[in-house]
Amino acid sequence: MSLDDPTRQQIDSLVKSNDVMLFMKGNRDAPQCGFSATVIQILDTLVPEYATADVLSDPGLRDGIKEYSSWPTIPQLYIKGEFVGGCDIIQEMFGSGELLETLGIQVDPNARPEIQIDEKAAAALRDAVAGAEADGRELHLMIDAQFGAQLAMAPRSPSDIELVAGGIAILIDPLSASRADGLSIEAVETPRGTGFKIENPNAPGNSPDSSPDAAGDA
Image 1 (spheres, one colour):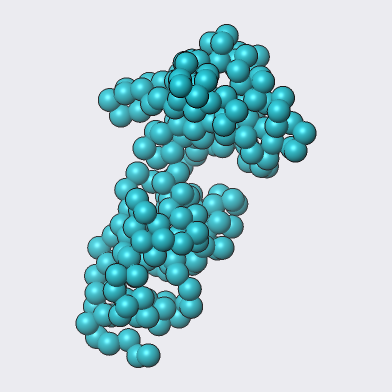
Image 2 (tube, rainbow, N blue to C red):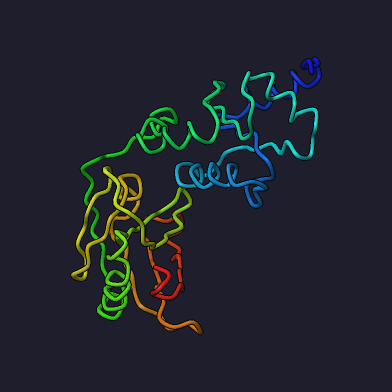
């Protein structure tokens, strides 16, 4: 199918008017395929704002973007007018740090933020860590571009920075580390059991981010 002029102009306008432009299935709040969801998760980690276009709502756009880029699959990411690639390439670039460079994000690889954990939270996290060690997972702290914080168990990656707070080893990626200095973690009781309240003084407006997940979900 040839790319007609109106569709080409539509794509040109989207690519040139947005520094970060993602053609995807669904939208940022509701991705409609796993590959689109993966790219959204990566971009949410890196940048607070970016544009998306839902190819499912426009068949002409869905076919046209493939011819425009000479790339056969969706999603497709453009940064500053240049085609970057699809999901696999974006994942590789994110893992290597190349995507940060392409986006112009500067990160201090030697950042060592100060983090405070109260005794009750430390005890709950210690139990969670003990339950995950057998399959090679360790405690990670991640902070996205909107300063949403998440505790999770995952394998260690080469770029992770190891911190110790409240007697607990925490792994944090360099970008999250640049957003975490002064962060505190407190235990809170929820209907599902003990969870965690995370307060980050670096968040816009210094508003606390509460994460009341149970310790077993950390």
